[in-house]
Length: 451
Image (tube, rainbow, N blue to C red):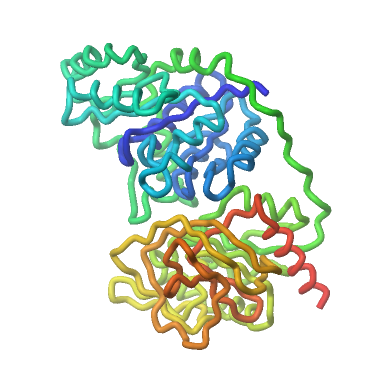
């Protein structure tokens, strides 16, 4: 299957991959191409920027979570536009464990057999930038790097010095972006700010992408996209007949979901109905509830004020409604969230309190599910990830945990997945497409509807 495609990689985090990827999408669209975006790694926020500019849902590509075959299947089956563009993660060769290429942007580029544009931050350097480029070009025997984009160029003289030095690499320069603090994307403690329900931010992304795109040689990039290597043809499996309804929390507080996870639930026969724990006074009639990650601490006062919603969710949990909650969802189900010396009362289903910290917990996770849960019926190994700045305090001594972690921190002493009644809530995020989580969750929701 011929899929015109390109990867936008960087020498490190913070070199401008997201803004440049958005600008390439904008430029391609101006030339009449439709663009399907993808994001390497377990990222929830960057994809919202790519979706905002492309008007297409962004899919994550993560070897650790998905495995090589599932990653390639997802990429091929979701590449239904004229061009597919993959934004990398961290530095190009940064993989799991620090000294491994596994799950790196280069690993994903190799699996998808994609050409790569390398973004170089030219600030505070000139001739030495060629040494950086040569290092990335020679570090792996097949770097796949076919173009360079220079970011943060200070002047015409600076640009000329960099270009002259880079002639030794024989890699074409397809973009020179001038230094401009106004072109930087806004950030929050977990990275960029989500674009959900933020029209002002969406307008800014559009404006910045247009400006940056004027400094990119899109014609050269289009030439690179021509004559892609063949990939095995895949097609998305059909959805089963709708047989149960799952309510999904989706607003400015809860919006960290893998598109693949939601599609997996639909494929197993779930009808998804979205609601806002901030604004709504009732939950759609449902047989199950999915509360994803997000920023409940940022909008804690608004979540606290919606007393009706908190009481409804607590009552449903007590009545054994199947509920699956990840990270922000876990925090919401505790008694309170404490941030900046302010305490906001939450649902209070779990006898624990959430405290925000200054230390980031960012890990791939690996472990065993050791008990029956709403998404699993048997003991088995799993791989996932966690990304949070909070911790649970005052966890009840009789709390039960569903996950034993080999890698990752979890809630308590390498344990994760609080399990109570028919509720599973964890700091860890799981990927549904290479497991039977979606099938079992839908089955449990169906059983609940019949009880």
